[in-house]
Image (cartoon, rainbow, N blue to C red; front, side, top):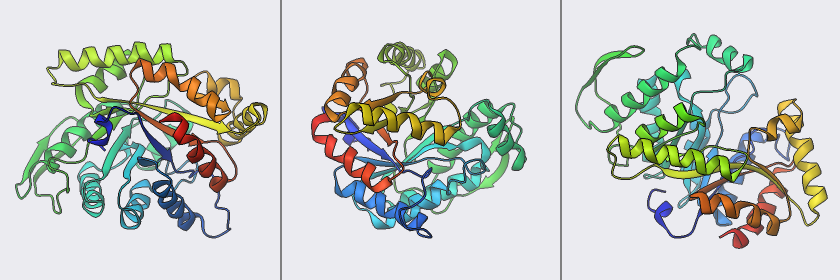
Length: 321
């Protein structure tokens, strides 16, 4: 994915619809893998798998990606976004290195800290990880991941505020030298400075292109201040509903998002990038984001029928690329 994202054209990822039940009862996980394979067949550059282990009943993204690694050949496979602070970091490094081996270097590790919300706090409480300090723990986790991944055959020790271990030798090591790229979510000045210092890629979902341009400028400034040779790859995560009828698409977007989150659509869309309309309208809507710097777009389809959603979004890709 690193190489593909340097192309002159923008690249596009598909977010697996783990919110939705499968079309065939009892085959949810199998259907998810089939959707990921189909996403590769229809031309997506990446398949992203979300994470929320104890709130929405989503499957483990690392396990799903392992299945996809065995079933696909070309497409990049990514966590989007994994709650890294919930996981024991040495075991997480081991799991992700194994998946990167299975995927022959096609893994991207997307990480987030989680929203400040009661449902997020319940997940942290359930696994015995303090919710307060989760950002610092995530930052330290990134250091641990990279240290273990970049030391093949050598013991690694770490003594930090949140994580301590001594003499750990990781095996297997990742297929990718020094480990797969790490992308971060996050918006706001503090989060954007963190992205600029630490991340290989950035995947926010600001509701306007102006918001995006302002945040991207801060990411680049932070990367330069940290002495980095180049800034992270700029991505965008957007929830879309597409239909020949723009009214039908907007209605589907609203009702699906409200069903997912149990919150009014206007409250969600004020914070997240969302679009409902025709494929041509999506092209026009994305244009200001692309001018603001976006190089990779992750599309989440708002639709109760996952297969229809995938085919509809895939049919729009020629217009978007």
